[in-house]
Length: 135
Image 1 (cartoon, one colour):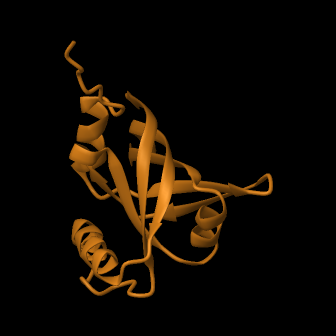
Image 2: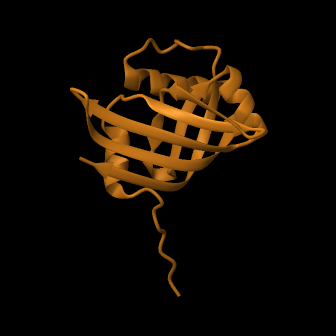
């Protein structure tokens, strides 16, 4: 019997996630209270993982409840062009070297200085399910 790896994220959704530096919205929930906040992200296709660097309430919520959602949408002139929604499990990476490397990759994607947001901590989100739509 041969096992075939099945991608959770459809190829077209991967292309959209990697296409340009648009804002994502991270949803966390603790004690029945949802919290949604904008984040920069980087999608790692070969691992089906999203990297973010964050701090504050988002990070505290993830430490307490690692189940998260991520919504990414591209608009032009007030019209939605595409959207991708991801559900996954977040892992906080408390390694300063890994965090610095991820921060550089994310900041590069968004055109920020490599050392920007130095106080933030790396979070890797393993994608459990994905949906997308183009318009």
